[in-house]
Length: 192
Image 1 (cartoon, rainbow, N blue to C red):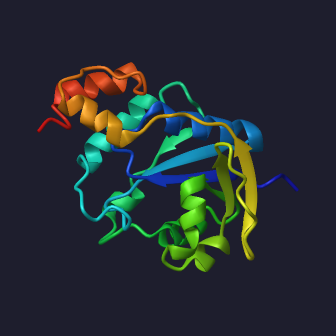
Image 2 (image 1 turned 90 degrees about the vertical axis):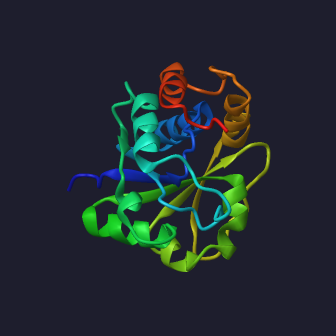
């Protein structure tokens, strides 16, 4: 019997996608020999209700530009077509229905692993996925009911810092793929 496909779900605002996101996905793909990493930009993050991100179309296009040449990377706009905030367990349930034979993973940083008990219905998410957590010097502690894979690495990138830099007139940033920086400039994103 063939091994099930290993598909990692990587949700986030990706506003904008930066080299830290790509590094995390690459580390996860290498460490667990993932067949696919699905980047899932959210329509509205339940953790960031005080801000409005760039359009879903722009964020998807920036993801496509940033993942060019990564044969295992897929940009999936599923959450952009869902009503209300994007809850991870709902996305995982939909993906489990879409890929019933696959082994599903969820990629996250240490900060989100720490916040997981405060997410909506985390036990429903944990029942469907194995968590891949990036440790930046911290050691993620196992959690009852969760299957955990820890990968080491780190990148200083911050989407907030990138947006601030662009709003101050910078046209490039060391944490941005040059093609993404060109898209941001061409579309006038993040300018006051």
